[in-house]
Image 1 (cartoon, rainbow, N blue to C red):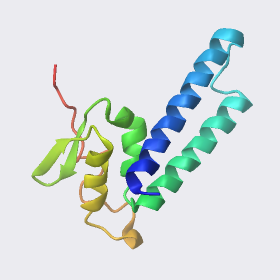
Image 2 (image 1 turned 90 degrees about the vertical axis):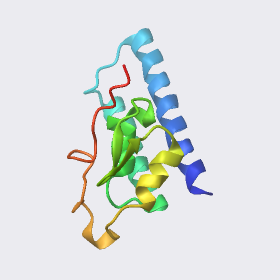
Image 3 (image 1 turned 30 degrees about the horizontal axis):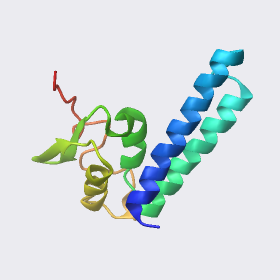
Length: 125
């Protein structure tokens, strides 16, 4: 399976799970602290990590893209040094992963971390 299909599958799994919990909340109510909620979203988080490893992301970009950038829907800016761009698509995410300056053995020692200077709000409004 290619990397684009893996990431697109991750987005579909998220949207399916989110839709199921929306329906469950309307039917019976559901709290984020419930065992079902924690087990389901915990499994999804493991899937996020597995996809990240499978596509060669050792810097946390997939996790950032999923949770902070809402699968690119927010169009947040990220990149390295002067090479910043809105990250909106799977291809944009793969661009970040492919240009990551650090090999796997120095994970989390980012030049521009998603939670630091590499990410800026995209003020499109």
